[in-house]
Amino acid sequence: MDWITEYDTASVFELIKQTYKTETGHDMQIGSDEFAISTVVAYVFGVLINAFNSKSKQRFLATATGEYLDGFGDNFDLPRPPAIHAAVEVYVEVNQNTILTPNEFIIADDNGVSFTPLQLTELPTSANVLFVGCQNDNVLDENNILSDKIKNILTPLSSVISVSNTQISGGAAEPFPYTDEGDDAYRAYIHANRAAQSVAGPGAAYERRAINCDARVLDAYCLRFDDPGYQPGKAIIYVNIYETGVAAPNTDALNRVKAELSKDDFRPTGDDVIVRQANVITNTVQVEVGFDRQFALSGQQKAERDFVSYQASVSTTIGRAWSLSELAKMLLTPDKDGIKALYIKTDMHQFNYLQCGIGEVNNVTVSATYAFI
Image: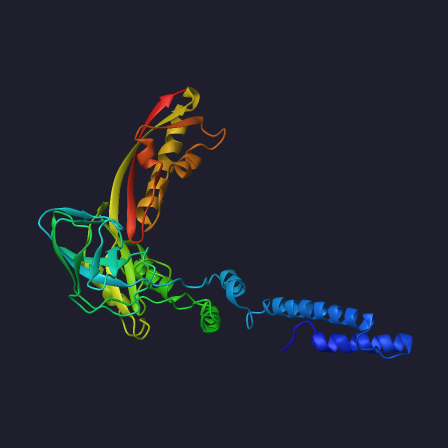
């Protein structure tokens, strides 16, 4: 199907010859200058027509390809899902408290397929830890690795005795490569998910149901396609559970959430539901607020309200980073309540921006003092 015109090089050349005969009353002679020029013009027009037709097809979801198809996906908030790295739970045996750092602690199977912890993990005792395929591996592991096959420690730690995967790994894949077949699959993915956008998607549905099922659940996050640790066919949900203001794993609440999300009348067929307590990172930031003496009381009240609001938003939400500039923007409202400056007493290099990873919560406490300027 042509989108701009049905003309090609041959039909353009025929049109030129017909027009020549109409205007001159003679047929164009092979070998003449007119014939040579017409051939060149027809070729140029043919190239342009093909280019116009090709570009025109990129305007429609049904025929767009490659980066143009990506544009449609982005407009619908459905970006092309990236390559999925293999993920697997590994039992890590330790002889003392150990911290496993992503991309620094690396293990592998006998074929050299390497894995690293999904997130910074502290192990007081031996336990199962979720590992993902190393991001710098050039070749995706397309096959599942059988249990008890990932046993090689490439970056030894004195406190780690041994490692072994307790389950078959979720094989990696590139679901929608930049090929004709990949574009067709991605186009079908866009159509299917567009139809589902009239209601909450599976990830949002899991999150909302987890939060609503127990008052102790402050936030929930379900891994998506582009998240490290995502595994097709598994709904992995991190929950932030607080009791009496102190973050702590709560088996009762976790079991209640899993039972609610695993109900047959809610869970999509085939989903394996996994519920984990979010890893809580605790930090204290000391600040000093400076304001005009005449605004002392109102300035302090405003600062305290803003501190509480900011701490609540950061300490409740999974994956929420702590940002000095964001806090300062809340406090330093121009010409309001006399607040003039914000001084950070804690090491600026350490706390200017506290990143928070997948399945983590920044439990940041802001300790404030007040001074007159």
